[in-house]
Length: 104
Image 1 (spheres, rainbow, N blue to C red):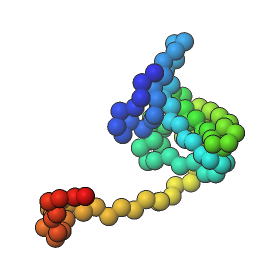
Image 2 (cartoon, rainbow, N blue to C red; image 1 turned 45 degrees about the horizontal axis):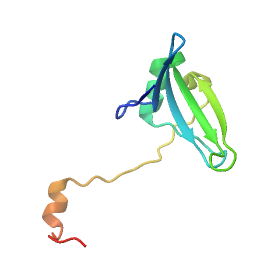
Image 3 (spheres, rainbow, N blue to C red; image 1 turned 90 degrees about the horizontal axis):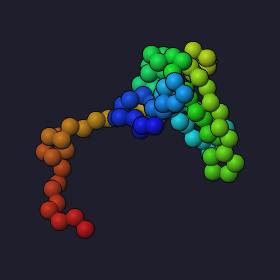
Image 4 (cartoon, rainbow, N blue to C red; image 1 turned 180 degrees about the vertical axis):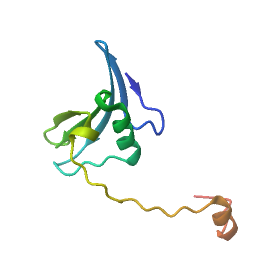
């Protein structure tokens, strides 16, 4: 079993019994929505039957595991834009920020 490399689109690569699984794990404190990143979704579409989504619901109180093979084709998903980030380059914050040598 190997943990993913950065931006791999999955959390675990598992090998056994002539099978390789690329597993994305989502844990929830309840039974709410599960979100895949664009990268995870694209990897699921690419790997098809080798890609698995493991959902652990009620993770803190009564954990229950659901495993879904080939989630990109088997699950109905809605595409939502949920993350907007404003990115500030280092030259901008260095030029306009007040520098403090000692940080307590």
